[in-house]
Image (cartoon, rainbow, N blue to C red; front, top):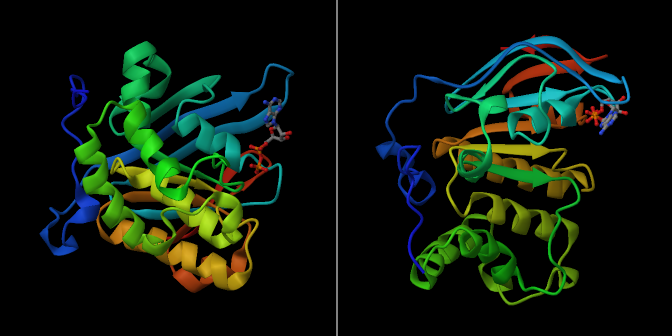
Length: 249
Ligand code: ADP
């Protein structure tokens, strides 16, 4: 198998396996919402006229009650849903304009973590993580090169051959983070990543996300865990009734 060629984007940087001190300062915007709204086909208005800018290398929390529109907002960012008004620009791309190969390549540059892990139960930890790179045509050698530091980063080197059911919830979420980052995407979106976890495991997950952020990744996390948000001191926006409010800078 050949390495994937990146015709449209510049080659993916490899920030997570380098010393964070060697990273160039990031100056541009990673996310821009401009008068963005989303109404679902059934008429449900999920998001109303939102404006948001997230800088490259920023860590942002999106809070808000259940049903307020947090997941919809993330879905717009990775192109799972399209806005019904306004623009969604991620990593310089107008997401609504992407189709076919361009959309696939765009999605490769976004790591996604879900509340319910979405692991393949019949595959080991290592296989669950490698599946992303296999699908993208990476060589076995390159997959092996990336696997060990990624497992180490999430503290699961000794669990590579376990199956998901042999792991705790926190460990399963760490596998899903490893899967999301093994291709070193410049942006990581996490939708309620600590929603099923106790406070200790939640804190471990947030620390891993903070570490990735310190390596240069832009990280956007939805949560309704106010305590966790306060403990971190990152910028916070809140979604309420489909509108966005700045909570802290
Ligand atoms: P949150 O993530 O904050 O819980 P969501 O973004 O999932 O909120 O949902 C926002 C609103 O949009 C809710 O009223 C929800 O019922 C509605 N919604 C979400 N997905 C769909 C869909 N596919 N079709 C219709 N309505 C939806």
